Length: 189
Image (tube, rainbow, N blue to C red; front, side):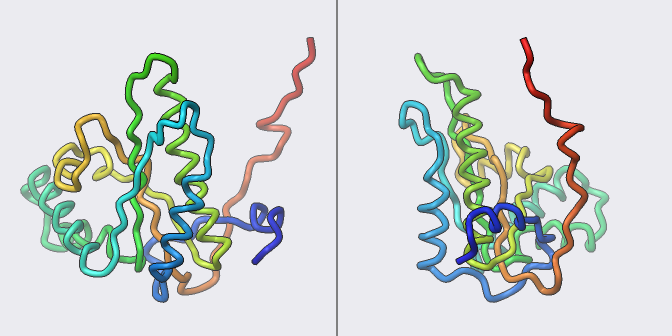
């Protein structure tokens, strides 16, 4: 297992279409989800949950995405519809992080949404720590109410991201990162 600082310093996204088998085993998926839960959660509300897509379930979910796409774009070509059908089928495992943020007497919804984002990031980092590539994607279908309903989300739930996990099919290149002078200041009274 890589050193923690090295792990954090080397994490980068791998394109979902470039993720292939092998993917995480059932035991590794359990480990990923357990690590994803180790995030700040003010009030112990657990304002997130997970949906795991693997095997044929990826294609079944893709059929939902394709149907919604076809309804939105009746003039779409068969190739475009097929592209949408395969949205969740590239990586061997896709895990949806579902935000369950809701009004609470003490805990602001914003904090609950941030907790779901932290769970998604922990999932990405855990995948990297296990030697897999990962990509956190939303896409139009993460915001389509018909897709969300078909995937079993309640009316108040939202997709924080679909985390695609697998083995990179080739070298993963990093993107330029902002310089600290561009994004960090020190408060001075």
